[in-house]
Structures are given as structure tokens and as C-alpha cells.
Length: 555
Ligand code: FBP
Image 1 (tube, rainbow, N blue to C red):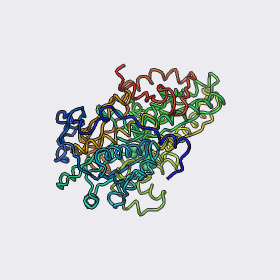
Image 2 (cartoon, rainbow, N blue to C red):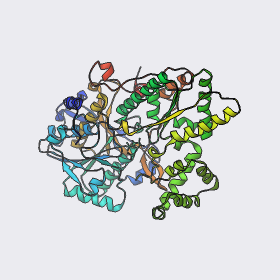
Image 3 (cartoon, helix red, strand yellow):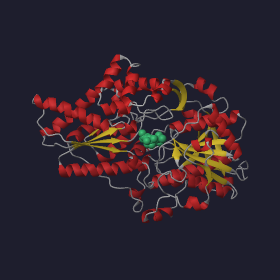
Image 4 (cartoon, rainbow, N blue to C red):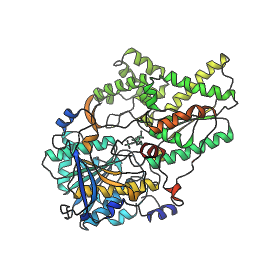
């Protein structure tokens, strides 16, 4: 347990606000059932895979007498899965408080170190003493997290054994798209095995890409973007003071560029690359380099040899030639896992891979700096994703921009000075003290999950909506996990997965940014939003992200 600072001790006392509907006695909250649901696409295939759990209705909690709610003591297991996101502890606190409110004899069991805790039966009971030390804290250290995917027959079998052994009535899985896909598979497995164990998912990821018509945002995004915006804003201020560096800032976000777009909206950098746009326009790496050089040259002509460029972590996978390369590498690495594991040195690994790639992809890999081509063949995560947090795209861009500017200098096109500094803002944003928004949202998500459980639901995601309003006006309910799914290629096979929400280039957040960006390239219109505030005027402490505001506001 980390030592508590004075601010943290003060935050322990913060009482998260619940949506008004959830403040009622549980026997006075009833589920309103919508129509049967389908899926994002591939409905037939998904129906086959989820024979017992496909097609459930959307649930909304409304006020009304509920005689069917489970009043018996129950045991709920909770697991944190994947990357850290601010508010994870508050989800657990919300589950705990709701469970105890329903029945003091109910128990909350934390599985340790992520989904592997369920498989390996590593757990601890979460008592009031433990819970009270983690209220409104960042991090996942109360029970730890991990990226193990429950996928083999043996793993499912072990999960079943441990769930039965520990008399777990329901499991709450706090995770991103992949972990919630796993939650759906687990719910289906339990149903197939005629077990009564329910499974409820919670939408977590700083990346902000677990959202759809029904899920407005994932938790952790709000805090992470506020932290990155503070850091980026500070750099902008430094740039304007020193006027001598170009800062290339890579921002986390494994695939979608939501984080970069939001930070751009909050800080007005000179350039923000958006992966989804790069893909749509089929921009090659050299086109991106030209785009950056153009801004550098124009600013140099105005005597501005400085600037700020935001690079989304997932950019590399959107550049067409790299998309193709990574797709091929993923397949080769999945199919030849055992052989590759036996090869110790990276040079030999690369040679092995080159023997399986076509000539143009080999040439592309060979054209890259050695570190970058090595980073591209690092082990995939358990869900088969390339680990983009380890690929230093910002450094690759600096190197290529430097080269291009040198050529242009020789041709007399560029007369400025170029000195670049690289940054990666990633892990800094995941475990900060949850913003008020994330503290409230996560607590409500956990609390609401218990209500779904007590009403007998399984294979649902806890859903809190109407988030642009004050928490008391938020709505609560459940969204069927299969409703968000489609079939995608993973580790060389077609798999059911929850569809990731990429940046929508026709939606307001991107449109606001793109309307401004030509001006931002040349003018210095930087904004320094400052740190997250926890105490003070509502317009400061309860500020929501621009993404959420633009996507959801009726205004
Ligand atoms: P989740 O999707 O699991 O929430 O993780 C998000 C993330 O923070 C990405 O932004 C990043 O690329 C990745 O995790 C880093 O993974 P790791 O923590 O394993 O280094």
C-alpha cells in the first residue's frame, strides 16, 4: 500500500455522488426491459458462439416496487483486467457499499493480479478496513491487475472449479474491450455448464475506445486526458518561453486517437496527428513527414523555430504500409510462436521473420531504424495486439523529419534551425487521483453492477448514462455484452470481440479540431489547462472532457 499524502487523506473523505435513481432502497428500484438486441455485425456467427446469452434486452433502472430482487447474502468476485485507469478502486468501493447495503452478510472477494487470479485461485476477501483505505485513490494496487486471457479449455475449467470452490455467485470484470469480450465468453461458458454464476462487465480504459450508442465513455479517460493536457500545456508554455525546440509528444492510446484528439482540443498544439484520418487518407509515412516539414518550414519563415506536435501511440498501425506489415507480423508471430521463442537474439529473430515476409515488407522493415524494427517484433499481448506503447514512433518521426529538412536545406528550401525533443506521456496518466468525474462515475458503475446482479442479470455491462449532466441526473442500467460485438481477426483466427470505437471523422470532436488546425499550425494559440482540481468552483472541478461534451451535449 502506498503512503497517503495529505491530499489523498482528504480525498478519502470524498463521498462520490450517485445518480438519484440508485439512492433509492433496492426494493424500490426495478428493471425496465427493452427489446431484444442484435450485435454490431456478424449476427449469425455470434448467435452460434453465444447460444445461451445472445440477444438479451437493454435494461434501464426505474423507480418502482421490486419483489423479485435477491435479498439473500451473496458472494461477489471482482477482478481488474488490463491497463490501469483512474477510478478502478472506486468501482470496487461502489460494489462493496451496494453489496453491504443489500445484505450485511454478503461478501466481496478480490481476485489478485487480474484474470490469472481466478485461474490460479489467488484471492482475498475485501473487508471494510481494506476498502476504506482506497476510496478515491488512483491505481489498481488494491488487488492488482493483469492481461491474462481466459481462453483455453483448461483455463475455463479451472475458472469453473475455483468459482464453485469459493461459492462465487457473480463475477464483476473491470476491463477494456478485450476483457469485456472475455466476460461475455465466461458468462456463456457458465450458462452452458448450467452454473448460476453471473458475469457483469465494467467499461474501463484510458484509451476511450470502449464506447458506443449505449456506453458514453470508459472510465479513466477523463483523468488521463486531464493529466496529459496539463503536461502538454506546460510544454506549450515552455516552448513559448524558450522558443528553441520542437517537442514531439507521443500520447498513449493503443489503437484509437481519442486521447490525442482530446489533448489537442484542450491545448491547441501546432500539429496533432489523428491515426484514423491517416488511414482514411491513405497517408504513407513519407506523406506524414512532408506534412510536418511543411509546418516547420512555414513557421521557420516567420522566425518560429519551435512548436508542439502530438503523435498518437496507435499511429503506426494506421499508416497503410505499417498496417500491412503489422498484420503480417501478427500472423507470422502467432503461427511460429514456438520456433520464435527458441531464438534468443533479435537479429536472428528478424532473419527468421524476413524469410516469411514478402519482399516489399522486408524492405520496409529494413528501412527502419534498428530499434524500431526490433520494437515491432516484441511479444504480442495475450489478446494478440502489438504492444504499441513500446514503439517509439515519435523518435522515428524526428529522425525522418531531420533527414528531410537536411535535404531541403541543401536545396535552399529551408533556412531554419531544427532541434527536437521527444516525450512519451503514457503511464503518467493512468494512476492519477481520479478526477471528480471519474470518482463519481466509477463508484456508480460498481454500485449499479450490484443492482444488475441482485436482479439476476448476466452477460451485461454496467451502464451509467446522461453523463454530460450532474451525477444526480445520470441514468443507470445494463447493456448486453453481445450487443457490442463483431468478428475480427486475432492471432491468425476469426474471433468474437467487442468493437472498438475509433475516432469518428464526421463527429463534432474531430470537426472542431480540423476547423482550427490550419491556424494552429502557424499561430501560437497554445492553452495551458493546468492540473486537475478537486476542490473549488463546480465549473472547474466538475469539468467534463470536450469529447464527451461535443459527442453528447444536446446543445
Ligand atoms: P487497456 O486497453 O487494457 O485499458 O490498456 C490501455 C493502455 O494503457 C494503452 O493505452 C497502452 O498501449 C497499453 O495499455 C499499455 O499496456 P501495458 O500496461 O501492458 O504496458
